[in-house]
Image: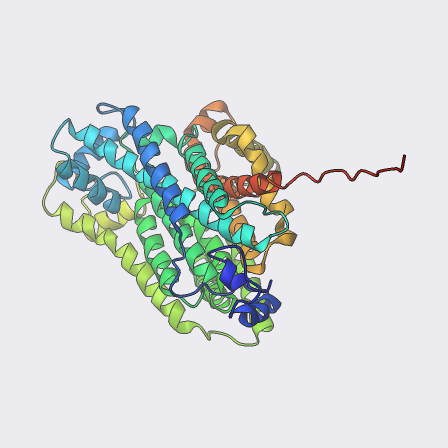
Length: 483
């Protein structure tokens, strides 16, 4: 791979590049060398894909936007956004502030329409981030697999930009996500924050020395949990994704998670956390805790040290708690007696009742292998129906080329697997949906979070497929016989 450094941002590659020797040593270590400090990580084609996808998705959403108050909790949410009040549990403080801004920025039409515009903007930005990650990931993949890449630089840029656009729009127009972004809903903002967490971790994955992106991901994840507590299902996958960027940081994160697991287990034994006592909840909690502890111990043995990255873990924890601090908004808003003041969180009892969703039924996870298999079948049916069966085929292509990718790209691809497992199957266990059609329609929206990974894999697969199909056809050799 001599000359990779010169050819990473501009081809053709020059074997006489000054960075050839450093690239050779980086290639031997199995890690992708850091990009030059003067070169931006996201290139022009990546931002083109982001901008085009965001703009076109927003246009589609605005043309199909709900003109007034719809079903579900749209009336309550619209009123809470208009007055900056306390919405239904768990309060949705971040979404309330986000939607309130749009009620003030847009001086026309009714409040419900203005709040629906906030959903459309959040959804369009989420589609744009997916396109950005696909386009940028395609650069790394193609540069590390020169045996299948035969495109000119300009053609490659268009390929990446178009594949990113396709991935973003396929996700944005799937049957589970599209209905949410054209009405008053809190889910589009949750998806936007989840995409932002993944984008920051991707940025950090390729340059682990720039820890500010890891810190940013910790802050955004804290904000995400103030808007969607179901995204707690994403938490077990974070150490795996962090480990792909820096095994030592991932090791310390596993160790901290293991200590929290033991503390929680002690609380269960003392009678706390009733939703985790007995049944499937306790079983899956212990299973995840054992896996976390084993991963931490294994990485300690492999690296022969522990907590060498304690400063990074401490900063991540502080920023995560800072993101969760948005939950202090509902008690303050409750003191103003807004029209929607759910649970009166100005009191300690009302605050914890709101945050813990006390008015709803407690968690009742899936119990039994047979039931879980039936629910897994339901998930695949929903994924094929909502995401689209034809789009699932390209998702398999990147895994067929894993052995030809560089270490950094391979780790990123594999790091998305635990994220997908958590957002699809762990969420399936937590919600424990029925296997009937009504449950399928009710829970389909929550599984759209796992479609983000499907869209990323599909986009990477289309880029690889496009580069492979562009290979020049070898002309058959002809033999001339003397006459």
